[in-house]
Image (cartoon, rainbow, N blue to C red; front, side, top):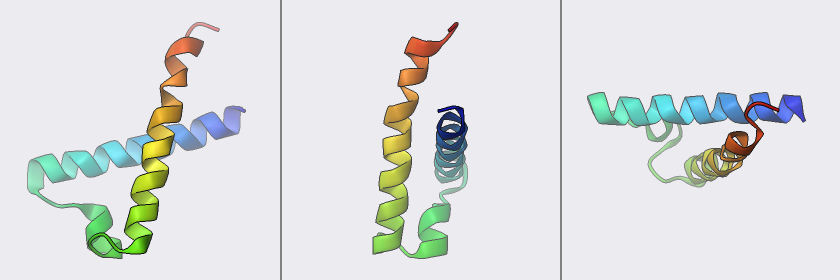
Length: 64
């Protein structure tokens, strides 16, 4: 379970960095690398979104 948590955390951080790049510089790194809304980009966005939802469970596990 710990490996999954670290993997999810890394992907959420990557997603946050991408959003930071969009906010500060107008650069969507995922779209730049894999094409704007290509099937691969959509899969990446979906996986990172699911990881973000999973990361919500961290709030319930803090201090355990």
